[in-house]
Image 1 (cartoon, rainbow, N blue to C red):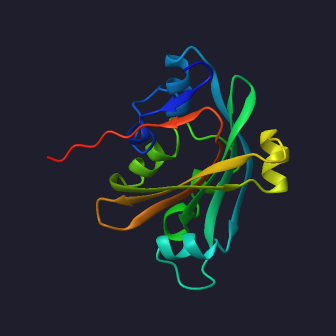
Image 2 (image 1 turned 180 degrees about the vertical axis):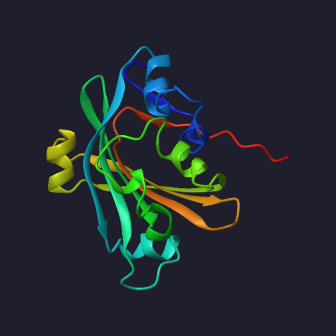
Length: 180
């Protein structure tokens, strides 16, 4: 379908990258003949939303590091992505610094001893907020697609909770699962 953007590589976003490779988003967009990048908007310690705190198994009031990004396709914003990390993992690392991470966060997390063993994703939709409309260049009646991803490490501990707010128009999410 013309103008449709398909993402079928969720697993590639949680796996560490080989040295010298760029991030998974840039590679996925490149395979489609497009340019994908992200703009780092904010990196800070915060009390995460209740849903995120529960997913990360934080106590009420505990802090996490959040990395807020605006994801772009061919220079246009298509997604807001907020990644939350428990302080026990992120504090004192590049995750807590306002800069891009070579190979992406999964590569750094793997170097820190946290490799994704399980990923849970939840997809929903709702009407866009005023801020989302402005940032994503949405019309007054447009909705957004929400994807919440929880990544759990090999020790069974949550290592990242990501909240993605995406333009719904033209988006197609494709999942392929093995049962073996």
